[in-house]
Length: 335
Image 1 (cartoon, rainbow, N blue to C red):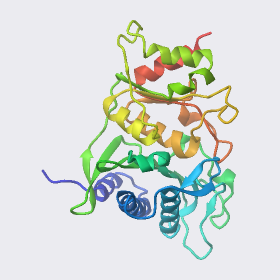
Image 2: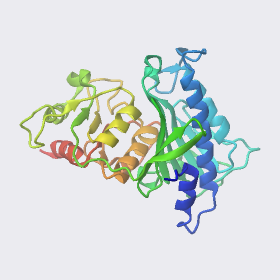
Image 3: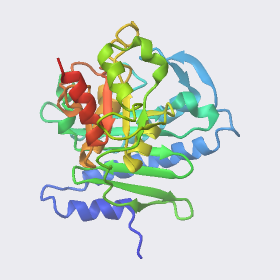
Image 4: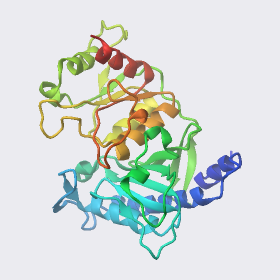
């Protein structure tokens, strides 16, 4: 069977889009090349000086890992030169990343988490790069303001992630289903390995950090308890699987079925709205979940319908198999 590369897949898809110009494919190819460079550094992490933290903290107040910083620099360096972006946003930087005046510009806006799960780097746990692509609707390309690019997740042009694990995988959607590609190191290409991914309607796994149980409100505790009750109306006892790298937990549940939760921690002053970022984490994964037949909410509201008010806005996240997420939403909605 002939194997299809990610570039071929994109070109086949764009044949059905009358307004396609090839600029999106150009952007995607730069993302792919950046991920290959990051993947090379991840694979050599124990052999060169890229482990440990830099001694600095990012806008989230988290320690910046050396590989975090490296991945962030690679993505900015390559993508600001691709000629199709008007601006970017990184989890690691407080403000919009403007495209330098002397570089060509376009109307796409890119949001990314350069290295999700970086606290697990030294334990050799799978980590990843999450990305989200929007098209700017209006305004002067030479002067991009925050209000020009803040859009609901439902307006994403594409979303996905690269997972650096036992194999290097690209999972993405452009709004026509979810497809997975695995990097073949012998040819240096991402080849189609998971066509048209569908998340099972109900899973057998739940993923949540139960150490925060005492920080949750009663509704959250009730929702999590359902998955541990063999007599619940879900009809089965679920297994707990929690890696602590969002992209890894999501990837497993996308393929096997299940639910991931990062609730609001109402009694923790650091995370009253949860820990995860709406734009660079929750929204892209929500688009993937919904395109695969799953569901994503903040407990009550669809993630893709939340209007972002700031660049690093946080949100609770309940995401995964439709029946499992619906059960949590029903508990939160009950009087």
